[in-house]
Length: 288
Image 1: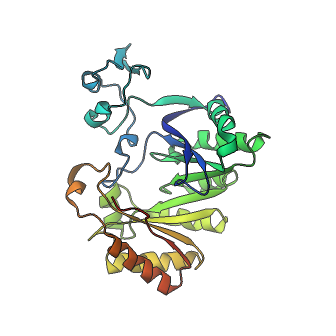
Image 2 (image 1 turned 135 degrees about the vertical axis):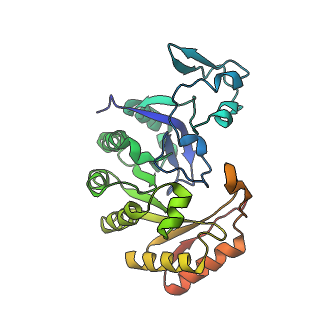
């Protein structure tokens, strides 16, 4: 299983915002949602080697070799021009990374780490790799004290959740909207699997937090907030709910014209949840 390769957009060797403690974070490439509010839109698509990005690279870090775009990281100056020009929200700078590669990085940084988080894109699209990685971490005497978390949109079937949850310590699950039409408009997908996943993960005792993005006029409405409140209470009043505020960072297209979510608006939702009995509601530390 350690010979499995993952298509990785980025690896952070230290993060305090991707789960509890200090975490090694692996951002996998590719997503089954196409969210208009995504702040990492370059993680959505998978490179189809069209070559449109090559002329945009002013340091010749990209080249076409045998019909495939090849990336030279030693020449790259991180200007990200290739990301902005890509027509399918992909990145030519991805890496093919093995389980052994991640374990080596984790060992080097072990004194500073509390755990490992796999994010994206959508982490569960590369489910075999995530399962293999988490199993390897738990089997490694130097690393088995690390917790293994998944940051996900929850769009995964029950049988796949059963396989993943056996090796996962915590899940951070995003709900984009409760109204099916609103959810589809925001993501291109329905929300049935996500809502079901929240219950599956909670019943397994692995739901670290439920995340909800507040968007003015779309998901901050009385109806959406009421549904969020009822859903959270159905999972248990001790469920941890993190409210995120829609901002323009990374956003493309029509969503750039949408108003940003204010601190006042988020606090109003948070107060509603707390009054309803939700004991732990987290709000943003910063509004950019």
